[in-house]
Image (cartoon, rainbow, N blue to C red; front, side, top):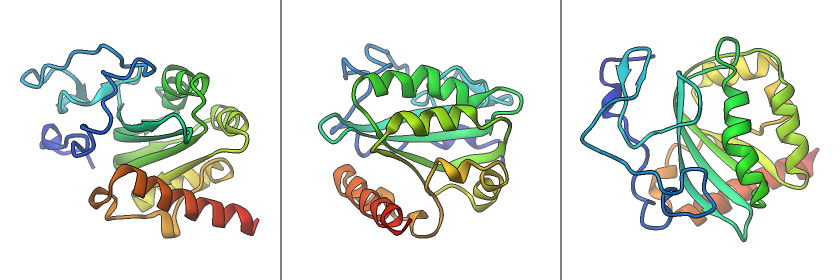
Length: 195
């Protein structure tokens, strides 16, 4: 639920010494300059922390927390309302972020959604396209609220994104990024092997 304190929710900062999207020449945010004193971006009129990155949607912002090109992996955190019905957020995510990283060989994605407050679904074609393009990779969602995951299920997103159960990892912030990635990778691989 959106609150007046949204400006206090910042992207997870502890991995910034291991990966910074503005310093990564292969990142869509390479060269971006951050003014941490200026709160200018809003979601439904509520200011958000200036460390979040705009991906083309007025209601959903993100932060690329970690990318490991040799592993072909990326961890992305989100804030806001995921609204495919009105704003086609999945299209913005796919075209502006995922397509870019896909060209860099990224095919394993961990989406962190504990700050995603709602989901409004629509057509699943961009999810299907993304799923088809990762080929031997995967898309996993971690720490999304249960009501968001339920709505994803109602719109068939569970055909393309692995989530729920053991992937509701509440202590992900206590781990180093490569340890967290390995944990999620092992869980996803076990689930895929069961199919």
